[in-house]
Image (tube, helix red, strand yellow):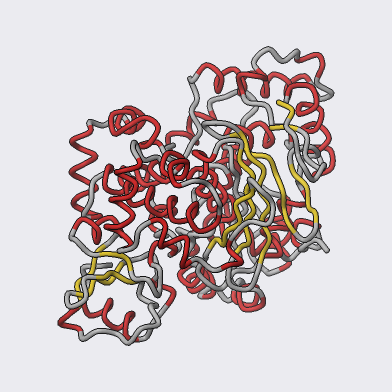
Length: 489
């Protein structure tokens, strides 16, 4: 979008928050860059240049606006919609792969050379993987500086910087303030009330309808791993350097997030996974506009616009839970999952007392005794095969997964039908066009709305909803009175 100068100027002049994260405005006369909705008086059009990323602005020598704080914009929705190399790369960078494994490790995961990845990112985003990771480190550093009392040296290494000097230089260059000045200027309420707990706000593009989002997570919560408490969804997180516990609570203009991490180096990854869990980088205006064009869906969209797709913080975990949920009720699926957690999960300490374990990783389930599972023999074989393939690395589920290839790999497993493969594609892999025409709730809703209810006919009708069929599923599910559609009290 940043190449459409006229459209960008209109967005800046109207202070349209819908475009935050789509592009950034660099002001030639002041040397700063802003989000489109910056509350300051818009500069003259001839003084504006537009960049596709904060990293590109920083590469061009601009510093972040202190008023609109463009580093806190929602992420670009492009990376949720697309499945090409650039989108998969951006999802891995957000997951901290460059900081942990370097550009070489990033390239190895994607199956391309470092040069190819660099060339494509530069062409589309104006910055390479190192610059994009650097911008992300700067944003993480600012969060730690402003919301914790950690010593600056600890902040530097937790944010992923190799030295305190590099940390200081980067913060000064990006924010035109030293780390100490950032901490001094931070609002007093930003400091966490509990030592070791990081409190922050997760921005999103409005509108956001939280009922089905948090209702789904709460209704399917696995005891010991997830819970709904004090108007917040809480769960344990398995992270690269340790583990964490997060509490997420909806507010009108943000999601309140409280993170307790065993290692602060996991902050960037934890935030990225929480954003993916709640689908916060979606563009609800674009989604709802297309779905509203169908007369059958229009009343559902108008009634509760901004529905998101509830996703996951761990793709392998969700795949296991999808198999456990085959052809059983939500309550039965939770019971099966809770038994696995108790028998194989890693215990964790929760100061609030409600959470007890991390969901077991595939490696911890690889030696699972099928006879210990209280389920039909065929489903036991499906689960053990899935776990074995995940543990061996023959099947990879992650932010970098190719949606089409992974779906085909899942369908090749015994006991995997279209519903299981598509629900994993929708909620674990993040495919916005995944569709569930065989789902009982979808078919029942389609029949009530006068839509075709047979899978083939419904799929044909749903072609008009592409590429947002996963969101159409959320609106169809919402016609039912199931607890997944109700925000818990």
